[in-house]
Length: 108
Image 1 (cartoon, rainbow, N blue to C red):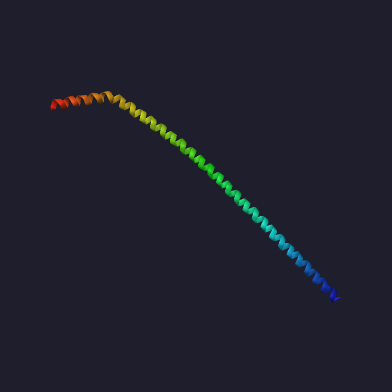
Image 2 (spheres, rainbow, N blue to C red):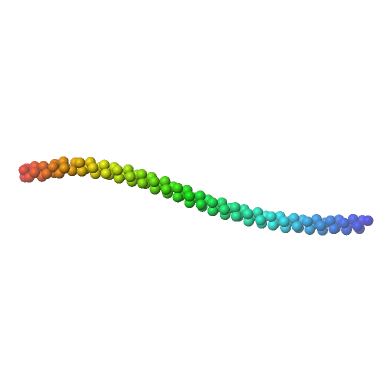
């Protein structure tokens, strides 16, 4: 009877060793699968971040372009106003210069 029990224990140990080896192989396989899935997730996240960064840059460039146009339009308006003011004084300035030239000749 002790011999049968010893054989049963040995068979059980073999079966448990086989189950343990199978469980280890399955765990390694699952780890590899999860690592690949995690690597894909990381790569997807990077791509999404790149796309989002490009979109944010495009939006920032658009806002900067719009602000530049506003500033340029304001500068054009101010320049035109200053040109109009200068033109309005042009005749008076020419008259003053002519008077100064005449006065200078009389003083010589």
